[in-house]
Amino acid sequence: MSLRHHPSDDILTAYASGALEAGFGLVVGAHLEVCATCRARVGTFEAVSGAALKSLPDAEIGADALSNVLARLETQAGASDRQDTRPLLERLSLKPKKWIAPGVWVAAVNTPHAKDNRVYLLSVAPGMPAARHEHSGAEFCTVLKGAFRDEVGLFQAGDFAAADDNLCHLPVVEGDEPCLCLFATEGRLKAQGLLGRLAFAYADV
Ligand SMILES: [Zn+2]
Image (cartoon, rainbow, N blue to C red; front, side, top):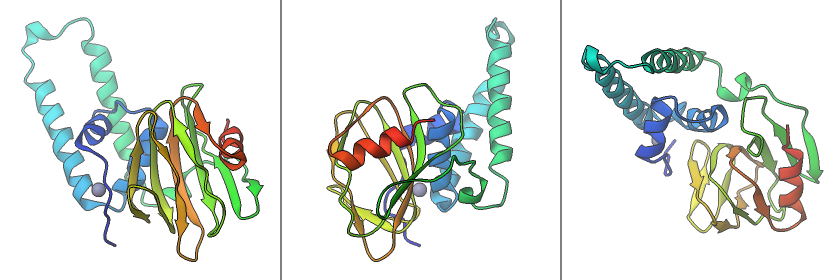
């Protein structure tokens, strides 16, 4: 599998330090599952932050030391979750699938997230109208099956996409099979068109 699109180092650093919200971490984890290059980078970032913690002089260990250590332990607990060898798709806890149009379904993922955020699987059959949308926050996406194309390029299984504020894009399913993607979306999605609005509304948990 030749992956074309990877998370930035900023995203991998945030992932390694446990700073990402769980759903966003899941989307990055779905990419790491199939990308040895990014797994190695995360390993490096984890080692660097661990070494930085150990090298702190005693005098600098202040009142927040305990919470820092707890955060670190949580990160390590997350790491052991990642050692579950089942494919990520089988490990996800999903709400029931909701069909929102012929060939299009969405299933919310059970994971802690902020009230306005959404974590969900979206499957779109070839030939379905795409959900053109804008963002008011970040959106992470990893393709699990199939492929889509947008203004940035072709995204195939394993590829990672991060959209920033105010990006308006029009993904189109590529090829003959449905495109299944794992999304984490921050804030309110300004979907244009009925399909986009329905997908976002139905992904509510
Ligand atoms: Zn990668």
